[in-house]
Amino acid sequence: MQSLRVELGQRSYSIHMGSGILGDSSLIAPVLGKGPVAIITDTNVGPLYLKTLQNTLKYLHKDALVVTLPAGEESKTLDHVQTITGELLKAGYGRDCTLCALGGGVVGDITGFAAAVYQRGVACIQFPTTLLAMVDSSVGGKTGVNHPLGKNMIGAFYQPRCVIADTDTLDSLPEREFRSGLAEVIKYGLINDLSFFSWLEDHLDSVLARDNEALEIIIKTSCKDKADVVARDELEGGLRAILNFGHTFGHAIEAASGYGHYLHGEAVAIGMVMAADLSRRLDLLRESEQNRIYKLIKAAGLPTLAPRLEISTYMDFMKVDKKAEAGQIRFILLNSIGSALITGDVPPAAITQTLQAFMERSA
Image (cartoon, rainbow, N blue to C red; front, side):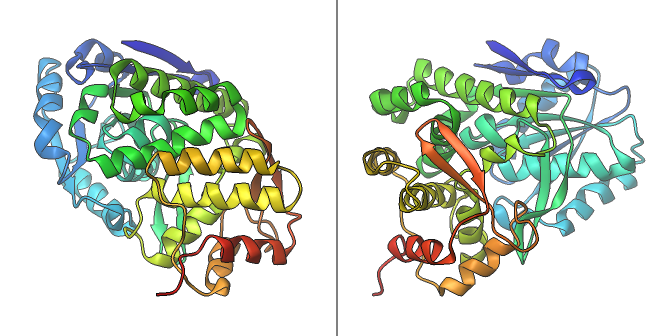
């Protein structure tokens, strides 16, 4: 097992990564609240790993309420927050309870948000079971749900008590979900870690084969890169926005095509290809570097083309992006691989050209 800290003063917490740690009660005991426990999971993950976590909690003399949500991005709604909080209220859970998020990014985001708002804040522990959740969504305290007009538009910054990532859960992860998580891994190399990007280029075959040593490297490096950024800018006042590289386009793709059509990482992959292209059009990024980015994303088995929709449709969704200011779309772009910048000074014509270049061709 390996561990690292997210340094946020009184809100600091540990990320533990390793094989079989879902059954390690010594990791869970120090971060449980004094009161009862609820496990939030979904219909895919529950049958696989719920019993293990329940047994770990029983060892600590905690019988857990279980709330099982339908699997998929479509569940990431306020209605399902109501489902969770309603079950907690019916069970008489107070402010001393602990919510355990057992699942991927959707379960982690919605559980974290429910923990933030239930009785104005209760303890939350993240147990990510997908690569994307392990390297990104479980770390940093961003929680929330979707709205028909925009992704993650309703939420809160709310840090977990701990993140416990059992890498054994990746054994059951479908190939498409695994590759989706690689998009966020590649992102860290692009925004602030050139050496990691180069390592991914050289070791992608081992990563795709789910070699244990390669998995440990990508999870630990991604979590460390994210933790370093979050520690410097917890509430996204500036620097933390670089973690959204590819997400301005990506979130628009998810919303415009209907939540669930693309996995989050797939939409982000297309968004990163677009953001690299836009960077090159603005003479920030060399064409040779743009080609390296495209080649790695393609080699990872990720999509590179968005659905063919009206340009105005994508623009409308990007305007409600959380990074937008005074109606102006802000983009995370690249000066080079490993060096990101935040800008709102992007000519609409360049955005249009990028969208047109990376949309699927008409049938």
